[in-house]
Image (cartoon, rainbow, N blue to C red; front, top):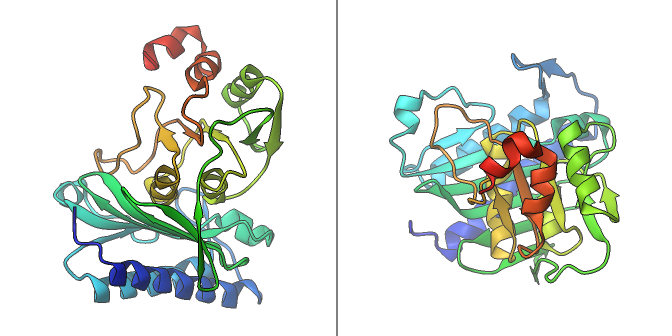
Length: 278
């Protein structure tokens, strides 16, 4: 594992918080919204946070490249040669930012040999910061106080599930139906993973496009807290293995003994489900 020291760990948290301050400076005023080529929104806050993070990480670790959502046009021929790199979403949840509902985050992950070995997720509005290193504990920091967090396991009683009421497809609905009596909660950005990590949510199914920078930092936090982020075949998510930076379907779990394969088989249907989750 690359040398992730306590000093470096803390320095990246500082960078994430500085990015959060840059975001809030825009959030508290008026701002324009542009559309990127994939029709996703872009604001001055995205770019301000991107600049803070990329400048900070390059000063700290010039030996490791930075892949950010706002500078992702790096050829696969180059990316594929990276054993270690930073994977960054400067503002995860731009649509939530535009709605001014506070449900957006700063995501910074260190990827080594395709695995997230360190992750920081910072929520600028609340000031909460979740952070973890692979093989160690996960924490939520408020101010300068860290609290160790763990998933809810075993998860008993009504499960709390992250699921959008306004944007869901038939597969998501089938997955929720298969779960039975649940409590649905709508929440933006990688906050969903963090709430599972601290035991406030249990499951987050996602069918549809996300990008690698959306999940990597929070995956590290979730795994260190005792949970998992799994592809339909049961494998943990891995990064920078293909030319595309889009993720496939996944299920995030706090309690890995839950019958998620049964739920997934119903969501994907007999035609595809059983083959994919063998």
